Picture 1: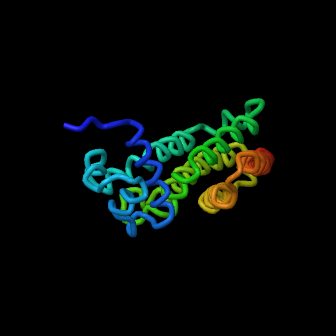
Picture 2: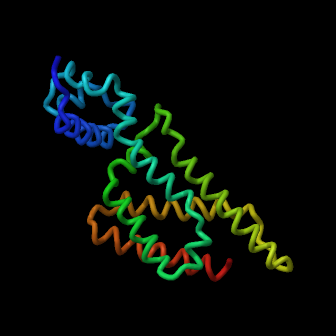
Picture 3: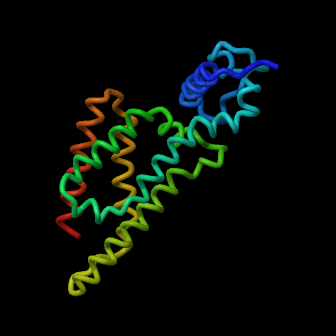
Length: 193
């Protein structure tokens, strides 16, 4: 029996990431990935039993990281010193270190269980905005904000962040763009909420 090697597995994952980003899940075959990785198709199947499993291996770590960010309670961050720098760093590192995986997850995952990921992020952030707007309305009952604005706010924030990921690939540019983007958002939210 052939021993599976970490360096071969990692090479396959890197090549799969490149091919999935270029073609998307639906237009990618295991043969395409094997050719890009320079391995026989049969050997590829020893590492990953099917395309779905390989796709999952490429995007699951990124999905998990982004979901962790969505769970964070923003109120703690809004009130904490250095919030903009911390969040900017976290979001910028995620965007830079996992740029290809994020782009695949968000735009190239049609036909997979991850196809609804972008909408899932929007829903989660909308729920968080609902919570903050509800709290605002509780404290400012004379001038309440309609919870219907939660979803457009969530979409606007995420689309702006995703545009930074799509547009830039330099670590410094991503860091600066993310820092300024988050600073503007938090200044605006803090002023309103």
